[in-house]
Amino acid sequence: VRVQAGRPAWVRSALARGDVVHCAGPWRASGGWWSAERHFAFDSFDVEIDLPAMTVLLIDISNYVVEYFYTIPLIPLAIWLKIKLIRKFTYGRAGWDTFVLKVPIFGQIVEKNIVARTSRTLGTLVASGVPILEALNITRETSGNYVFERMFTKIYESIREGESIARPMKEFSRPQFNVVCAYFWFVFVGGPIGLLIYLTRMNNRVVDDLVVNMVDVGEETGELDTMLYKVADNYDEEVAVLTESLTKLLEPLLIVILGGMVGFIVIALFLPLVTLIEKLS
Image (tube, rainbow, N blue to C red):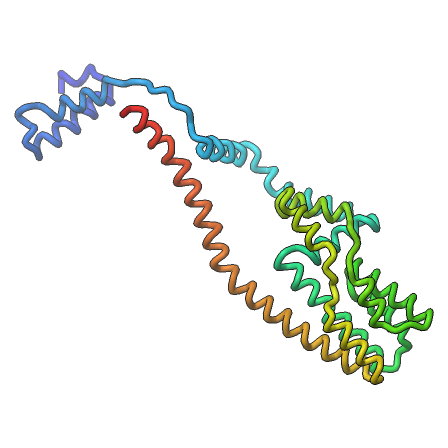
């Protein structure tokens, strides 16, 4: 104890660990463990290596979260406010509503849900004896989407001129090119790839030929409300199937996302060690 009293605490700790191991192993007599402890305690060296890009990215993300954690809830709030501001203008609302209808996976659910709701609303109004022009105005207000509102407006104008419902429904169910919609595809979907996908899907109609044909048959036979009910029932069933399928896909999708995040962190932490071992060898 007197010999160790004047030494630093970390040296006394190393000596204590050496003594414990000496009691349990064959190195006690030769003092080999203390030699290893002394080498570990006093010798050091520096190796200059560049951190991998994944590790640098992980460190930057960690530093940002620690230093600017208060900005994390502000990001979705800023995005929401920006969308609300853009939708205040007619052209901006048209772009956002078109983007919502064309976005992958969720767009089909929104589109089919609107078709089912508007078909059932129009069928109910026609069956109740409401004049067709007034029924179209009410249905347009219940759609909640600029693309469908534009389509029902054109149908309203065509009927006032003596035309049928099916022809303008087919003609004006195709969204027009919108710069705001292209911007949303570029930002939220994947840059140039998202913009390319939008250009390929831009001319897809929001109302299928099935709906147009059933409406045409309903007008010719005088059973428009019955055909609209059948359209609504069909699309309600499709929405239910899509929603159930999407719900079942959420669990494996979350597992894949979380697994990718954990894998990224583990690889980013071990890459410097691998680089150091290669440098030492």
